[in-house]
Image (tube, rainbow, N blue to C red):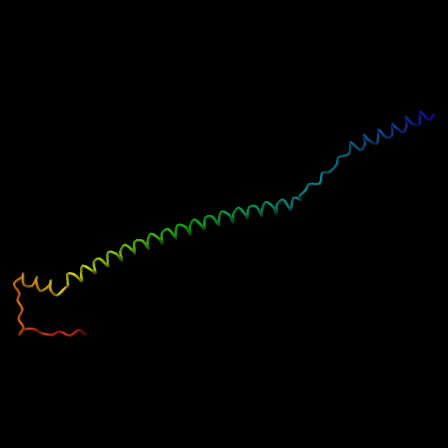
Length: 119
């Protein structure tokens, strides 16, 4: 009888193992669906922020480049203006004007000099 009881116990244990294997175990995921959505939204915001940051930096770079070009043009124009001012000062010297006047047939008359005052 003991042999029969043992077979009966082994059969019950085998049936229990089969029944346990047949049950579907629910897997618990590491993240819930809500957390996944929040993670995707956060990742999207980070990507958008990165793209926005890079685009702003490129705009700032372009504006700085334009500013440097304008400053270079202003510097060149200042050089041209100073060169022209030097030429004006050379051409407006009294001796040069007097020589040009003599070449044109004008002469110096001390009696016919009038003084003009600046306002």
